[in-house]
Length: 99
Length: 99
DNA sequence: CCTTCGTTTCGTAATTTTACGAAATACGAA
DNA sequence: TTCGTATTTCGTAAAATTACGAAACGAAGG
Image 1 (cartoon, each protein chain N blue to C red):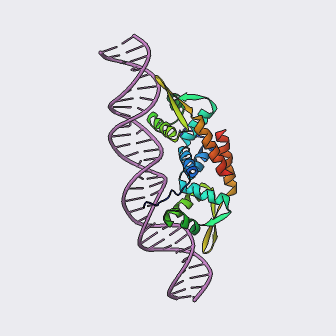
Image 2 (cartoon, rainbow over the protein chains, first blue to last red):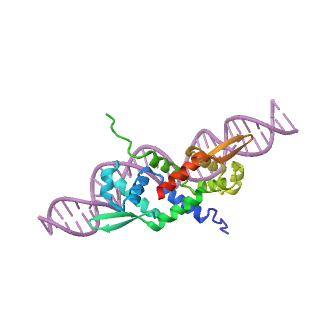
Image 3 (cartoon, rainbow over the protein chains, first blue to last red):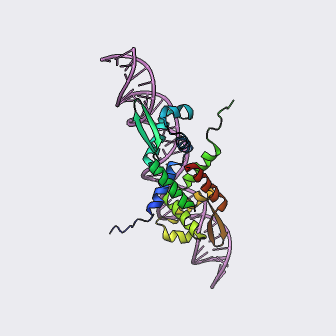
């Protein structure tokens, strides 16, 4: 009868997803930058961060998948910015969680 | 000369560690319970949560390693509680991070 | 001492994450 | 069109995570 019944709440799953996106220092670092200054390019990050560009690209992809970050194509560069809506959602989820 | 220089800040690494601890729904769920009611036993959780006891034990271990949760031995049971100090630290880190 | 209870550790397997360099892609400029 | 720049995708490998059941453990009770 497939009566598995969704065990975790939507909020718990969302929080876990956002937490997962922030579970690596380089991704926290990227978000730190994006939350302080408006946006930045993958290449700008690559010059700063001590990892290969392809690896950086993977981390950016994960941040995009989580919803926290979005990329705007601005050829030949790609500008990354916070997704403000989801950022606010994550902020609220963590705030509620910790109180 | 090993001049690798620690790239990420202490805060970034700490936040990533706490985020990692919260990157699985069952661990978020456990913290939710512990933050609402004082403490609880592994067995109490095991009855609720749809995973094997050994797996639950692993998740509790991870939460302990992250510092968010502590276990008090109270034979033959083990009482798990939030570690209030680290919980407050995590709360502050996320608060700063999101603002 | 032997058993039971609550819990963790061990052994193992499947999956995911993290990382890199090479190759591919997309666009603008020469 | 060919070249150079910016970036991602592919192929791959190593390590970590997640999960389970079986076995081990420590304390209390018979």
